[in-house]
Length: 110
Length: 412
Ligand SMILES: Cc1cc2nc3c(=O)[nH]c(=O)nc-3n(C[C@H](O)[C@H](O)[C@H](O)COP(=O)(O)OP(=O)(O)OC[C@H]3O[C@@H](n4cnc5c(N)ncnc54)[C@H](O)[C@@H]3O)c2cc1C
Image (cartoon, rainbow over the protein chains, first blue to last red):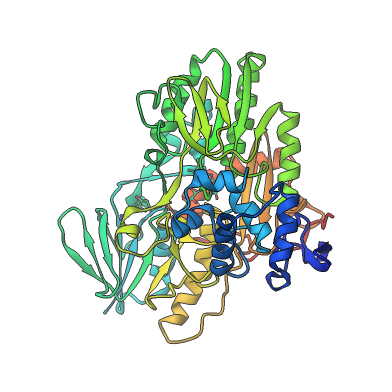
């Protein structure tokens, strides 16, 4: 949501999308499941399983102003534990799933 | 007679009481503030206590000193809010207080009970916090005779009050151990759930460099699952391990329990409100100010101050049926102590991240944004005086409530 001036573009699945300096999509409507698969690869996730998709769908559904839910909101909303979230989306799960789902970082990070 | 009820007489509640008592006619408006604690704490001062820079007396004053004439202070906690009935219940005698308008300003509290291992037998022996006065005092006592080792500062989860305080703690620790002559025997580590030193990219980079120069090691993306107090290690959800000799934790921060109990909060007991007006989307006579609100800006006294300024102007229009026109922009302005008599300053809002430059006057300063200077350090120390004598009493500060781009450099 910051510094629109420094907005760049990137190409995923044959489509040009707008991204910020950290590689997050600026416009959630430019996203598609094919794009998710490619961003996931960049994030070191070779294959998106049904459980991954459950989380991605949840985040897309519960995004507020284009921002993804926090880890706490995801775990309480999906019933998937924090530990599982870390094995699905290693390192920073909330941030990682936000990027894969074409959303902005969760608002908890201020 | 209309009744305005304010829950919590901390930074935000006290400022609101002072400012609105001046603006609202005493013949028409009764104002009541409820808080369980007789003492007002200057929380930013807790940071300096572990290093012997401030004492207990510097950060405590009787709450009554800051409540103006014409405002009733009730010393009690509130144990339930019933917005449908427009009333709250006091914990001390079970009495109900009705209101026409409610301001919730119950802040955020640390919850070490939410992380297994923290509050067990090593609590305040090898595990400390500095977000409470007791914690900061216990840590001061411990540091007086600590011989060195691996000191780990760990933030359990965000949001936390004053998100820069853990960094300040580490930089002050670096300075303190230098002065004690034992810096080379101390390893300083910052384990954070963020992927860098701060949330916003430019500040994260600049602050990250500063930490590195000071020999403070950052462990990013570290989300603690439990602490093993006997083995002295932090274990994360993805089974990373960080060992420590001395753990300084910033436990999970949550809103007051009464919020959760009254069904008003999110999963951390913070109350969702409109980010420009602080009005609850569910109840048109409930506002939430300060740390209690779930807002995408820092939980900080400076934010509460700018927010209250906007809120007060809006409130006196709102009660007359007029539109609220002073829209809050998320303005935050935080000093960052960096040790050796210096500090940095950051100034930002909902849409502009912290940038380098000069503040408040372009080309002049005297304060420097995102760069260390002695002027900033004096600014931070002076802030305590300002807090007690100017801010709480709701007097004007010569700083604009909304953020300004003047003096900021756009960096790529
Ligand atoms: C270590 C530390 C360093 C900090 N440094 C800075 C800094 O440098 N700059 C800065 O701007 N900010 C800083 N802050 C943050 C700042 O102190 C807070 O953001 C600010 O005090 C928030 O004000 P508030 O009124 O929302 O909450 P508080 O001031 O915490 O007040 C909340 C009040 O509500 C009362 N309350 C709680 N529950 C109930 C209940 N059920 N019924 C009635 N009353 C209740 C409490 O007793 C309390 O008095 C720091 C905080 C800490 C802990």
